[in-house]
Length: 593
Image (cartoon, rainbow, N blue to C red; front, top):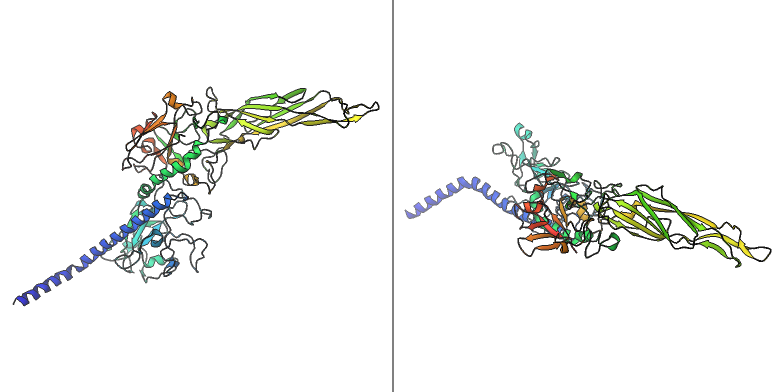
């Protein structure tokens, strides 16, 4: 009797278990999928962070491409992200990055993850100029820059929300026959998934009811319980999650790769400064109220402005300076030209600079000897021009980042150029530039023998010459920082528009009109640290403002949405560095020497 009771109880338990199996199986499968998707997401975020930390990485924050379809089944290639630079496709598709494909597990440094149906995970990411994965790992490849920065939004739409990427557990194969309502909701037509693993649209053999052409994905389909046409399970990565992974790294790269460039701009005697007490340019105005569309700003500094954005306007437009270039921002003031002369053996000298323009100083200098006699056989009569000094005002130099060069100068030899900043008056922030150079020595006549055996010039009137000296505005050349080559360590900063989210502050003593010593005056900048020792006696600072914590899309952000505390935006020369959190993501870097 006891044995019969045990058998009956076991049968009842088996029956109850069998009745629950479909429900438990679905729940267990979803739980398994959630775990492997979470593991894949952690690996993908780790890849993003480690790639960004590579100081040679041009696009910090970029995601890997999906695995190429034609890698499937290839033991050496499977799990590697596409593209494979220099490797041709074996007959279909492109060797460039695809938007959708299997998760590149080998590139992420993890094992091949499978969902509850035993299928490898899939992965979707946008590519191209608006995307987050570069179309070729070679930056010289002719594709648009990614422009990944704290203002960038996700390129995919999942259930109406913007995300950067999605990882998908595809589940078991389905025979799809969507209803009219399901088709209207975006689910494709009838199709039996045969798990074909090649072809340009092979993803439809694994994934259902997504519109990859428009970057629109879903996590559910209407009436799916009664007519199953969708069993994908997704996890997404948002722009906020990417920025949380890389903004600290980017701040460190700004400190190591960007700050040294700014330190060196106006830190020499040629600018009326020194390495110990440098000059920094005026800032681009960031209004305390209202917003600033950083993407549309020319990034031109404003006189007396000590806080805002970096003045990174360039005089030459190119692919890297597009949107922040102005050939006429820095100009000469022709009315201020003065000329002086010293040395030489000439007996008369004059100058005329009326042909000067805002783009070029042009001075005609005439000099020579009034009489030329001699008694030495075959002697040459000549005159040396001496030293020429031309001084003129160059406007707005202190509202930009420029360097001095004499390469464009013509009409003198051994030219030197100095350009101390003008500290008062209507031209403050400009420079009083002085070009010094040597005028040419000119031969005027040859001594000849006359009947008396004396030697004298054929032309007793002496010699006269006119030299044209030209000083183009290009002597204030763009600092190399403004238009870097792809090989420059700071190229990534502009290629991704990080200058649009980098705040800039300078002590009033160290702008072009300042007294040059904020330590003596007490006008230095200070950053009080929540953890660690305060940054004190700072001449200038940069702050990576980071992504909008208010969820603002794009670059049009108010100051309150740009810097995170009243202390950091009250423009009183004192800032604070708190721990990164949901309410604070400003990160400071000192520019002081």
